[in-house]
Length: 190
Length: 110
Image (cartoon, rainbow over the protein chains, first blue to last red):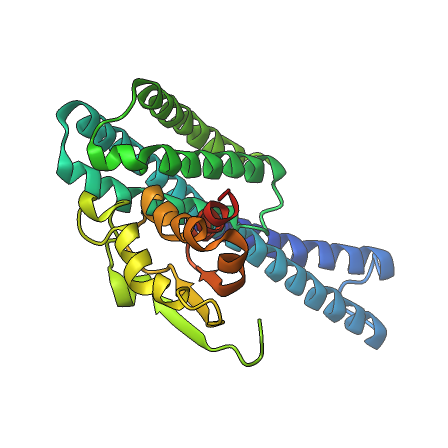
């Protein structure tokens, strides 16, 4: 988290200094290349305007980059949480299937509820402008919904899943894990 | 919806349970069957009753598909899909999936 903030601040400062330098160079070289100290009123206004615009643009870009960095950090955090919950889901599910663990069967409902909440939150991200990432989130959301569908039917209450459903659930959990990994990669594609 | 229709609001978390159970009463407490029979069916017994029932799904600790299917699909099987669609309004602001599924269970009733 600290490293990410530092990076964002550095980018902001770089853009800020760059804006100032470019403003000075353009104003002086175009209008009065030989005399740096005696400026006309119009030249002073031009330098000041360039400076103000430079500062505004660098502030705007710096802010935008910092916000985007923060947003990506929050998204990454949510994907990591979903990954952990998928691991837990797998453990609970196997516990129900092979150990007939009743306690795990009630925990799995709230675990899936958390997973649905997280994937629906990710699905509502609109301003990231990264279609590949948004498509991979849709895939994750579909798989989380399917898992809820496959797991929480009547078989959960009886602690007795049919063999083909067990295989389907195992496969979906497995592919969800790799989809979440892809999401993390796609998040940083520009 | 008729302007004169009465509106009843039912929150599953507030009025029924934070932890809804499975399908039938025989499966354990707070089942879909229990919710349907004790909270919803009383508004459907009189055919002239046009009460609108708003069911709020949010704030529970999760649903099973069997609970939602028995509560809403079961209601549609008993009183007819069109009647249920006209009078039941399912509301969820936090989990779109549950609302979509409950509506789908009503729609898929034959």
